[in-house]
Length: 293
Ligand SMILES: [Zn+2]
Image 1 (tube, protein in one colour):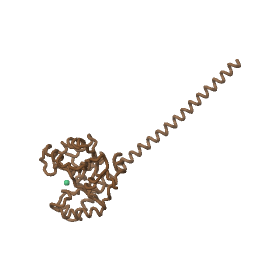
Image 2 (cartoon, helix red, strand yellow):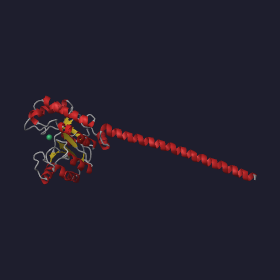
Image 3 (cartoon, rainbow, N blue to C red):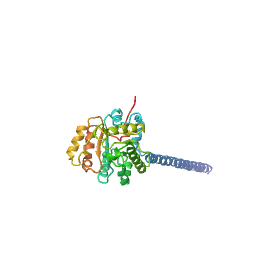
Image 4 (tube, rainbow, N blue to C red):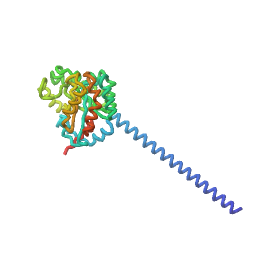
């Protein structure tokens, strides 16, 4: 009996011990679950803040941290900077779309870019932003860069004086700021390009210097599909023009999503596939992988 009693006592205490261990194990599991939950919530919140606060993808963050683009006050020709870039895989394609946003074309362009997971740069006209705010916001939300292409895109009024030029630039930056809720990347494209020939060539060179003083980059292009020259170009003609002008390892491609016909939007998958086949990767113009010595 006494032995039985001892045995029962030992059994009881071992059961109590097991129960305590189970309790302890339960408490440890509970605390661990709380810690994991807190870490998860914090990381999701941080990620959201990152997207909402900076409006750039994780990739863009990584690219940004590696990039050392010269300050615009030293060098503000962004195509030249892109051509001098030595980072990345070696071949980079910067797709750019001018004169939008328009319901008619920009929506199709966005759908194709999304399908191929390609980020691009949209040089928007301020007036078009103000008429299509939701669409401009969608461009931003889908991870593309919005840059400045004047407010009215009327060459004569825009290039009449430095005051009229900078008034339009400022007005468009305000529209971009209102749509995105953040300070815009200081990048413009001159309507008609900044080249030193043709109408307004002289004043454009003066404005380039003023832009540099004010810390603005500008970007022309070194490749195009020619859709801005005629709304009647066929798909084959546009694609041929892309292939014949894509000479650089760093191509800045001019296309349009303004009121100019839908052929570019239709052949955009072929354009993207062509550059992919040639070994290019795609980036926005604020993601130039530039490394200084
Ligand atoms: Zn334009």
